[in-house]
Picture 1 (cartoon, rainbow, N blue to C red):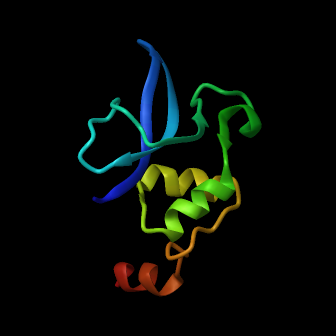
Picture 2 (picture 1 turned 45 degrees about the horizontal axis):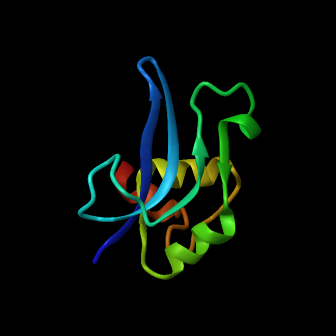
Length: 98
């Protein structure tokens, strides 16, 4: 069973709101989640109102093999988190540029 950490869309049309959840990889986007880790509101004014994330649980799931989506990685980076196994390296960027 591949476990993934990704966004679950909620809210209304033109006013989206997302929950950060842990899913089985076969589950549909808005389906049943294993655990809720926080929320992301793209319409929030400040960073505190935009992203709320239980960082301890996120690290726990990543350490146990859950795969975060690219969006989750960027949200964690915005909060100043570096997830184990997903550290940014300059060598990868330099190799891609040449």
